[in-house]
Amino acid sequence: MTPPQGAAGARVGRLLLVPTPLADVALTPLTQVLPLGTLQAAAALDHWIVENAKTARAFLGAVHALCPLRVALQQQHMSVLPKHEALNAAAARVLLRPALDGHDIGLASEAGAPCVADPGALVVAQAHQLGVPVLPLVGPSSLLLALMASGLEGQCFAFHGYLPQQEPARRTRVQQLERESAQRRQTQLFIETPYRNAALLQALVQALRPATRLSVACELTAPHGFVRTRSVAQWRDELSSLPPRAPSLFAMLAD
Image (tube, rainbow, N blue to C red; front, side):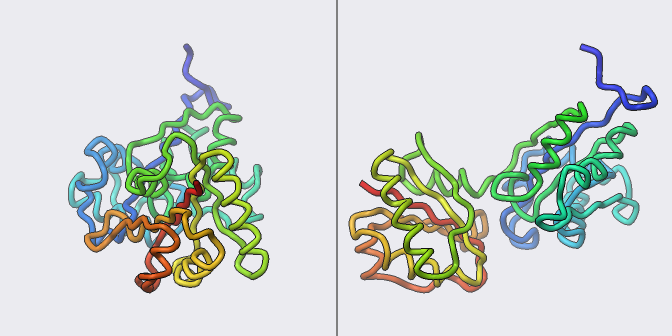
């Protein structure tokens, strides 16, 4: 197959989906969560699409300690993903312009696997439209790690992102997901902004049936991270607060 060609006939670069640590790079050695091949691929890049330039530079600084960067950190080209509605097809194509000039581009999220429970899928969709090859690299995904450790149904599951913040809309949505879980034997996964995790946990144990199993995965891959799965009745008996501002993922399965 002939490699994709840019407008001037040059070979098109690739879009590399680069996972990053789930925990702060200062807390988790990169070699514990990212394979050497991913680190080497990241070190070879000098064009990036990121959520936060400061966090991305901290990640690349940690990479450099293991695999020297091909281009100095100060000379890395970083484009920041536009927020929410500002990220449209036209904006995504602008971000991908270096690939059409022959440069490989890394797409990295704040934590974990790009485009899974994170923004960036529209950039990948436009890469396919433009003929830019997309290469996913190996690294941690909070969704899969939480599901693996939950003991809940791993053959059928769904991720729903954020639940409504306000009652009674949140209770209605939680109970709807509980019914769907029971009907389909499907694990339901969702997240919340870290500072609202405790409020969500309290809302879940109040809205769900006592026999429904609820799993909380908190600060995965960090030294003090944990995954706890209990029945809702057990959570009510031993409910304790979650660490403040700790990234967490919730999963539940109704029988």
